Length: 258
Length: 94
Image (cartoon, rainbow over all chains, first blue to last red; front, side, top):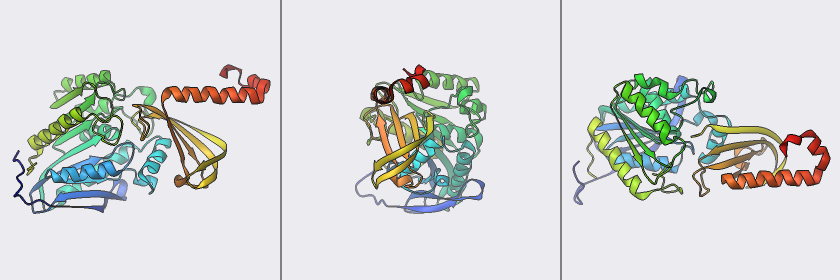
């Protein structure tokens, strides 16, 4: 990675755009990219259960700052518009957003990124919380991603009782179809997913000979990147971010100068 | 939706939220990671008014222990207010 120097130029553009979604829908997305012709790798960010919120727009800009064409689709758009946490409450009460719809939305955002003239042809996928689960699901059910980062995604392992029409298959059961290298970041004190569930997932990845890195952080629970929540753990978060940058640089290439 | 644990029930009554008093129609009770409470996990209660819409949602995030305490307090007040009649209907609750 080339280090940033104070005499370097930097700039980005970040804005709300509309992109295709699942089943012919049109949805909002937050799109951030470095200024310049690139070529740049792309990253799709799947937002977390608290909704399409400020943390995700900030994180989308963070990826652009690090040299990526970054897009975060609003996967809750079918539930209407409003304050993100109110929409998240509506989704929660409705039992979540269907897996098929998320796969469709993300696939369309991937197509959008790869169609850009600045694209280097590579793309990754990143998500936290429920978005981490969906990262794994999408990486198994679609082709075209070159690297995936699942941060503390719960319910990759699901019991039969947890399956619903919206979640008909436990993501772990798709492991044999995983189409790209996977980075997983987890907290030892988390119960959703528990360390035992993460270990079970890891066994499945080994069984099918998949390329993956899992890191289990001590003294961290769920959501330890979220500086705006009580679960924030500075040391673990900074180490985790460094692992994200190194992983994406390895598989996507980057013009990162931070 | 990290946990997927949610219980919905119809309710009847009123609640006071950001837009004043509204009739309540639904309670959505989840066990999940809270937005605001200083806890790893919480019981999240959304009291919803169909008339008032999302903006009038009354949201509560309680630590698991305080949620249990609240349930006990609600049942205790019901027991004192409705007494034997309630016990006959829902004897197992106590």
